[in-house]
Image 1 (cartoon, helix red, strand yellow):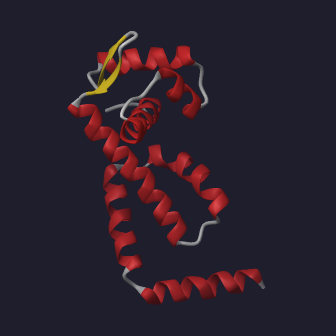
Image 2: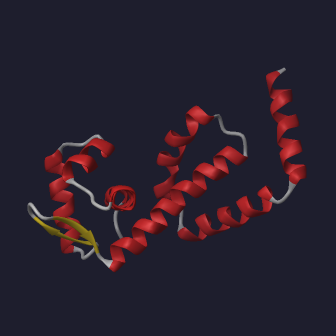
Length: 139
């Protein structure tokens, strides 16, 4: 299993490759707010652990294992954002909150949150209840 730091890199690489078709060290460094040298070290570790293939000056290619994990990490992040939005967390807090909790939940917990999100989205009474609750908090 990748460490939380490895997960952040795999998630970012997966996102970049999905959006642009490639992931460069400079793009990863910019998006993660780290130095390019740190990215290179992590990419070498991810290469060694067979999450990706890295050839200096040629680029990065995710392995099947890396793609699968990257896709799951993006799903986890999006699901947690969706869940926090659904339960009424203020938009300005969501990204920071997700970043703070995403590495500390088991995949079993993520799956149950997915079930709960699906249930809540199909339950209009919950939306009404939440709006009433939020209005009472404002008073």
